[in-house]
Length: 134
Image (cartoon, rainbow, N blue to C red; front, side, top):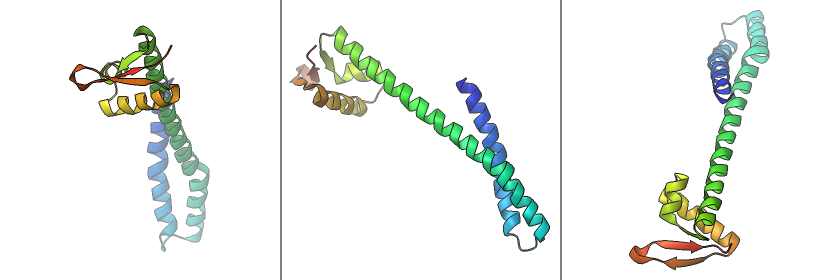
């Protein structure tokens, strides 16, 4: 379904954007006759703008869906790791499991630590371990 949405969005945008630009140039061309300008404006309003809008809307929806999937994956990884390790989690372990950068993992764990009143320990080598009460 996601692939189908991507294909449809691509086709709509590939059709709508260039034709919208072409229509706009024809409308703005002073040598275009009044009748041709009206016909092009009608085509722009009825065909090209709706397809461009719909393609853009599909792309936006796919983007938001992808963000939600990442957020859900990161959240489930966090809860799984906290449960598996009796409330203790390190930045490195979380970054590896959630496929995040170290900075992203630290920011996420800092937010969850504030939310759940977690404590911190500095381990050998300077790593930080977060302790969440289960």
